[in-house]
Length: 185
Image (cartoon, rainbow, N blue to C red):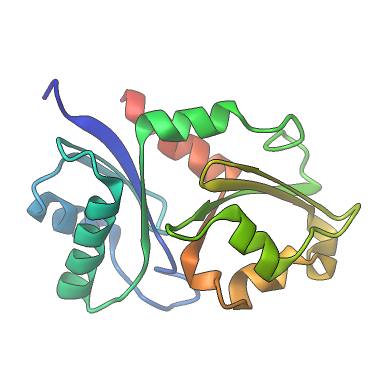
């Protein structure tokens, strides 16, 4: 429909290391039960693109979290972003992020509200000089690190084990770009 907007939902921590297993076909059906349209899933890690009239991303995230709990018995945080917002974030990527350099691993960290980048930086600390770089823009953080030295970085272990780990969801540059590309299809 013309007045519907496109959104991406990034579910945190599903289908990772055999935990919180949700088949993408079933997840798609769960989204459709919410009354949203044009549902497409990407990869097996909880990346969903959909259309709806609702504009409140916080409300959408809550509805999706509730559906995932009800349908699959899995309690995971969900980050929802409009297609326009995701495109804006990608257009503001630093020039060092997301290129074809195979020695560097590029990620986009989405910060779930009400957390802010200041909170994240306070909890995790500064990136290790020469090994990783971060730059924030809106509710996202561009994060790149030297692949072979990932265990020496400050952010690698702390994004997974800090008190705020459950308030972040991380996707690779390629995954974010593929998801954003779905808005035009």
